[in-house]
Length: 373
Ligand SMILES: Nc1ncnc2c1ncn2[C@@H]1O[C@H](COP(=O)(O)OP(=O)(O)OP(=O)(O)O)[C@@H](O)[C@H]1O
Ligand SMILES: [Mg+2]
Image 1 (spheres, protein in one colour):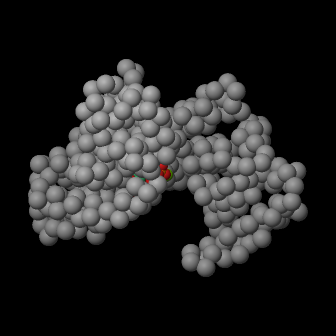
Image 2: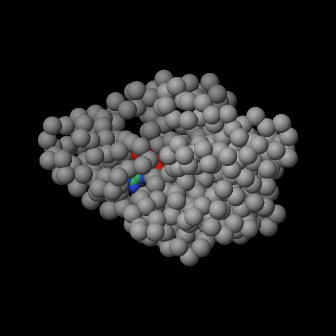
Image 3: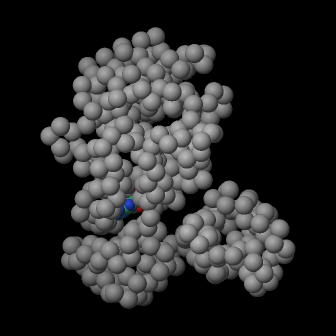
């Protein structure tokens, strides 16, 4: 089997590190806090949430654990549907689901079956905002009245800022605040949006959850993990190959897992530098069409700017004369506009340090592809 998982819920021996983060989150929740988990895309927030859930689920007095992914939701009705589905998934038993639906009373969702997964799909067709408020309150009340403690993770939480109509943020805050039996993990990748939601005095969720920023996995720890995963399946990989992998993927979890997965599957016994180079080339080739398509969505200046950042790898002064002159990118004011447009589109990633910030191309494979142009 391939020990490099590509899905977020990675079981223990294949899950790399995150020991301290797991301990921290478990402790914060045990101490009664709600937690806001923030990191760039694909660092491993969802994986960590599942890992934290796994720690809780083996306890004798295990809390009930609900995972709600609201990435694909665009309004309150959607939110209610995925929330109700997440609850039903945990309840499992028909009798429990029946009593849950009964609890919802007059706002009962329409239940159908997903043709692909066979899972129940819920949909709410609510006519008024009063109904929506009532429904949300009913769902949360249901959890509040569960016999045991409840933890709910709402993943991609920043999405609620894009809902049209009523302010979901204010509403959720109002209903969540009085709960005593339910705790939350709010997780999201848009750092400034998430930070604004939880640290701006004007936002409803101001100071209502402890902020936890997830960093990259430590390089040495990741290197040992990669070596051990190969060894665990009676294969091996040279230190030089591991070094190259972690440089090339910048230690960004998803890209590291993906490349390792490919290298692992491509060798019979020992993986060396050549195998890594071959796998990396193949990945870029496969993605080439989709990368090229992105060009059509950008202005020529934006494209040029992106290539320049990719060629640098990491740029700490993207509006500074040295960078702009070297890549012929025009005036600082133009560069500032390009920078904010590309960051907004999540094509560039800004990393903040105490001394300032730096930028890189968000998608590491895209960055490696662009730098070859
Ligand atoms: N600790 C880990 N060990 C091994 N693989 C991991 C680990 N954390 C994450 N991964 C892998 O990286 C991929 C991306 O992680 P995950 O989906 O958890 O990131 P995310 O931060 O939730 O991303 P997004 O913001 O896009 O939702 C996962 O599919 C999984 O394969
Ligand atoms: Mg995620």
